Amino acid sequence: MTGEYQHSLDNKGRLFIPAKLRDELGEVFFVTLSMDKCLCAYSSENWQVFSDRVNAMPYVKQRKMRPLFAHAARCELDSQGRALIPQNLRDYAGLTKNVTVLGCNNHAELWDSETWKSVFEIETTPENIAAVMEELEF
Image 1 (cartoon, rainbow, N blue to C red):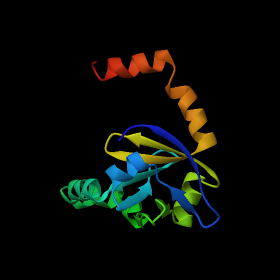
Image 2: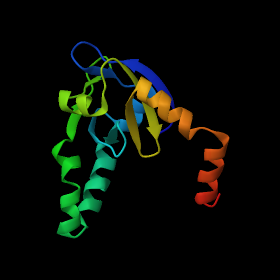
Image 3: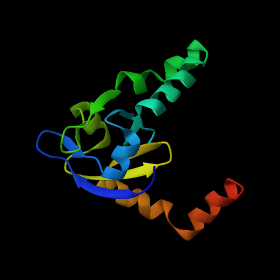
Image 4: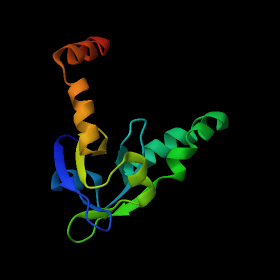
């Protein structure tokens, strides 16, 4: 998944999912916590891959993943391409109105737009991009 999109939550907590990402996420997808102050959205297929990988871990390590599963929500698109993001997840990511939706390879991220702006400014300096490319041996 790729791209950056700006959308707003409606009064009921529904978020319009961009058409390009809807095609990749599917009609039903899963949203959960992230290591960052955002949410991650996975297609059903990618959620199953994630779940299978956790199932392959020793039980002690599986327990560390408990918050990601406890707070995961199965989301369905309505006829207008919107998905209801549960209140507990919106609270975690600080989503109140303006949301930036990012494509991030095998998942999408849902950010409060102001929070994303701060992260974007840090992550997209030429020096940081060069350091990341070097770290990844590109």
